[in-house]
Amino acid sequence: MKKFLDENFLLHSSVAEYLYHEHAAKMPIIDYHCHLNPQEIADDINFENITQAWLNGDHYKWRAMRTNGISENYCTGNAPDKDKFLKWAETVPYTIRNPLFHWTHLELKRYFDIDQLLNPNTAEEIYEKTSSLLCQKTYSVRNLLRLMHVQVVCTTDDPADSLEHHKKIRTDGFEVRILPTWRPDAAMAVENPQGYNAYLDRLGMAAGIEIITFDKLLEALNIRHNFFHENGCRLSDHGVETFYADDYTLTEIRSIFDKVRSGKILSQAEISKFKSAMCYEFGLMDHAKGWTQQWHVGPLRNNNTRMYKMLGPDKGFDSIGDARYGKSLAAFLDRLDQSNQLTKTIIYNINPADNELIATMIGNFQDGTIPGKIQMGAAWWFLDQKDGIERQLNALSSMGLLSRFVGMLTDSRSYLSYPRHEYFRRILCNLIGTEVEKGEIPNDKKWLGQLVENICYYNAVNYFGF
Image (cartoon, rainbow, N blue to C red):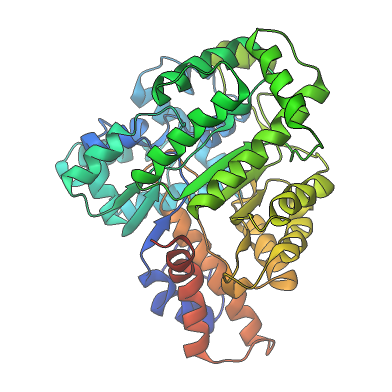
């Protein structure tokens, strides 16, 4: 019987062990999509305790705690930090077979050299040890990134953001590259006219122009797009429930913009047409700069109205959606491709039922100019666990080229999430090693070792140009 979380955790063959320890484990980390706060990195802060570093903002943990009968006061409420941690420790034993159980103990081991299982009996000791370490300068956020051998971090930033913190980080000479990512979702959120108009005022201030027409909106976005590029941005990111690719005319879009700018409610047809136009314009901007566009598609967000009114968005009340978007995705990509203006693209699905859709769709728009130009994104959100990762890898392998995959990301708000890259790498190596043991893949360790290194690191370096 194997010991839990030993050096060969998740590795079930000698080939898998070799591929992980001799190749995957040695690769630096490129985290090309996450939600880390650039101000915290600019200021190189220390967290006062493990709760601040681990539980604040982590809706994965909050969902588990609520399910375990823990009061909201210990999740997003005002309970003391230590009490929140003790309630999380109370929950951890109940997360068995949930990835949170693996992640929790990987993170305790990799950052704090703690081998104990977290539970009510060990909680006090673990809280004191981790919190004591986190207060030391060697555990500042920059040093946490160094500890995990992170090479590049791409944050998620609104077009109106000043990027002042990215500038400071660069001026400081921090060796880990902290780059902005363009996230323009708010620029097409016309379903809420009041919020949309307030956002346009903010965007106009950032761009130095008054946004009174649709053409001025595009001008403002292009000004900010140029600004992001000058500050190292090379990726965009978009979060959508479905894809938008309606037919429209420029006259229609100008009229729709005038209507929403005057504060009027749009029809669903008008909303869809406007978003279709914006998605196309975003794609054109990215192609002109040689950026990579990322599309995260499918979640149903903020399903609990009562909790949304109480806490706001991103508090753990989202789920997998079941929108059918195959035709609209094809039409969106095709609209850009017809004029040869389809840039490098990564598509992340949140519904595992869409794995094969995405794995086959990306093959329709490969054009021989860039290896893996159109990518099936890593298993995301509810799918970034063992089963979800394996299913994504299997779909991509069966219907595309696993060898050209750009690998894993954290998509996290926590500096303690980097063992997720290790988790992915172990699962990848085990998948390959198992098939070698079965005689389904040649036992060529040099070749397979290079394949693993490419997926874990080199493919991303070459694809993004880092």
